[in-house]
Structure formats: C-alpha cells, structure tokens
Length: 383
Image (tube, rainbow, N blue to C red; front, side, top):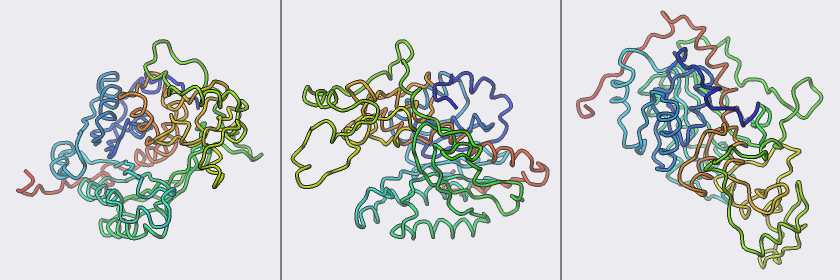
C-alpha cells in the first residue's frame, strides 16, 4: 500500500457503503477514512479539538461532500439517546469506532504516573455510546500501556459492562502497523466486541498480517523511502520546524540515512549524567519502516524525526504519509496542531485492513434476523 494514494481514488464511490458506523474521538479522521475504504458510511463522528474538527470538516464534508455529521463537543456533553433518535431511529448502527485519548495509558509514564488520569475514564464514556447505540460490533484502539496492571480496573469495568450489555469481547490484540503494509513501526491495541445474538464464527480476528520481515511468503515490510518523495505543488502541509544554526550544524554532522545524535558530537548538559534517549535528534532510515509517529513527530527533540538526508525535521506531509494519509488530505492548524492530529490518528491502511473483514462479516449476516434493531427509549430529561 502507498501512503501517497489519491483521496478521490480511494473514496471514488461511496454509494454502496450501506453499513453504518460511528467514530468517537475521531480526531482528523484516520479511522473514518479507513471505515469508508472498508465499505462503511460514517453516520456521525465526535471530536472536540478545534483544529482536528476543522481538518475533518474540510476533508470529509467540504472536499468529499460526505454526509457525516460531526459533533464538535466533549463526548461527555452529548446525550447518546438523543443521537440514536436522530440518526438510527429506523436503522441500526453496525459498528462504533474510537480511540479514546491515550496519554494516561502511555508506557512513557513512569512509576504510577497516569493511574488516576481523568482521561482514562474516557474509555467508559466510549462504552456509554456502545450501550445505547447497540451496534453489532465495536472496535476500540489504544496504546499497549492500557494493558498494564496499573490500569486493569478500567478494562475490568469496560469488560464487565460489555458482558452485561450482551457483547463478546475478543482478547485485546496488540498489532504492529508495519505488519499490515504501513511504512511505520507502530504497536497499538485493538479491542473488538460483537453482539452475542450474532454468530461470529466466520469472523477471523485479528486478521492475519500481510507483511513480515521473515521468509514466510508474506510481502516484506514497506520501507518509508517513498515518504520522502517531493510533495504536491502548493501543499500547505509541506512545512517543517525552523532550527537554530547550532542544531542545523549538528544535523550536518549526523550521518545520513539513520545516523544518531551521538554521531553528531552534540552533547547537552543532561547527557553528562545519563546517555538519554538515543533516538532523539536521530535521522530516519528510509530503508526501513519509519519510527512511530507521535503527537510530537515534527519535533526532532522528541525522537528520531530528522529527515534522512536534509538538515531539518520531517514535514507534516511526510509524517502524514507515514500514517498512510493520501496527499490531498490537508491538516489544519499549523505545524504543531497538524503533528498532534497525525500522531493521534489510526493509520489509514491499518484501519482499512482491520475493518474489511468486519465489513465482510457484517454484510454476510442475514439482515432479516441479525440486523434487528430496537431503538432505546428516550428519557424525558434527555428530549
């Protein structure tokens, strides 16, 4: 798969997208774009970051003129039962997607940091929508740290509520994006649930990898070499950080195609006490899948985010290509905001690879039996 594919090509015809999806914590829309590619129509999405909202609306509603309703509000301020009445009073929701904010679960949090982070409870806010919308399936994405023992109370409550609501929850799957054709090393957890009244025997989950670095008949991992080809003319996302003279000189001294900070001879006071993170200020090796795109992926001080041969950090467009966003998908808000949106996104090609088998499974179910939907009653206080 090629992260520079054309947005209009991959979404050329959505008229056959009959399966109905909801995307919570949608961000810029990586999961939504994957859903459309896999045959879903995203009925509504929720996001409260103003720059991500602008990005989503510009690409999905304005550019592609898709009829996805975007709610630019906190998920805790919305009434799920009202949204059932508005969007699913006659048809059922097929799948609820979402990647609740993961900072509290990050493996970079030391000791017990993040245990009481209020953002952790957003996975339960996510499930409030699942309970009310009663989708045939739900798929939640998060960082591997969510599985650490320090956070088990949140997953235990999540699983308990899912069981009571009538869902089978598959064991959490830790998947690496490079195993699915994404030019980036990126491990994330995906938690799938399916309604108990549906037979999931034909659903293979998680799907088998399509790529590998072994001689096992799979395609080889995709290197990030193509990420660094020329950007489209007048691309507003063809921008990178401006660095001071001293830092530019350090980059000049760093060997191309994978050189590290240590090779540059640049030693900071903090390095005298400990070696620090070896990847900081390092160059990306274009012959390998790229590093994980974080929310600070445009900042070389935060990781191995220096261009393979040029003397600056990677551009927004290059970071977006790492996440397999097409080149005419434009991110709003400037350098820092765009980097944050890209780092938070589900890689489009990974999301598509995961959602296609779910789409095929849902489409194979007997609509007259398995698609029966009973709208939830609307409480008077929520009218």
